Amino acid sequence: MAEKKSNKRINFGIAAAFLLPLSLYLIVSYLSKGKVQIPNYFNIERIDTTKTATGIKLDTVYHKVADITLMNQVGETVSLNQKLKGKILVMDFIFTDCTESCPMLTKKMSFLQKGFGKDPKKEATLVNDVHFISISVMPERDSLLKLRAYADRFGANPDHWWFMTGDKKSIYKYIREELGLSTGPGDGGADDLIHTEKLVLLDTFRNIRGIYEGANDKEVKNCADDIVLLTLEKHHK
Image 1 (cartoon, one colour):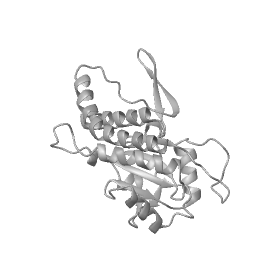
Image 2: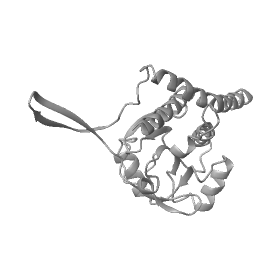
Image 3: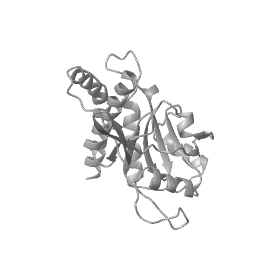
Image 4: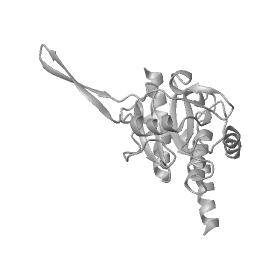
């Protein structure tokens, strides 16, 4: 049974390495025919009304995720929105002592990191358009050394994938109020724990453009497709 699970994970990694460039090729082909739908926006903040000569115009304003400052595995204290301005972000939430869902999520993120190395012609990179972020939900236990070792274990390139720690209350407020991943009560105190298997996709303007079940291979593939679409959207603009 364990061997079958291991083989499944290996097969997903191989598929990711080859299917992500293939996805790019197919999406570009379909986009030229007007058949691709750009990823939706999440979390409506308000609807503005404007009077025009022909009536009332409604403009939907979507939530923009606020900034947060954290420390990455190489010891840099960075502001995500400022330091990664213009980047598409893929985020997950882990802690290094977790033995089940967190290694699974991190392995999926590793596949995504590898998959966005090259385009179908292998002449240009997509990696400069997207940055991967894994934030510890147990920052009081995840020291810089532990995060660095964990990142190395999964082959994280610190130029494109950060494992981050910081103030727990700030992190939990970010997860709850900015990303909306947990609606339950909590103050980020010692007894508070958010343990989600979601992957979150943010565009360059920090709108939420996708929330995916990290345990579901199909949804992770959808995330990969949406990253490509946001890349095309970015360069089209």
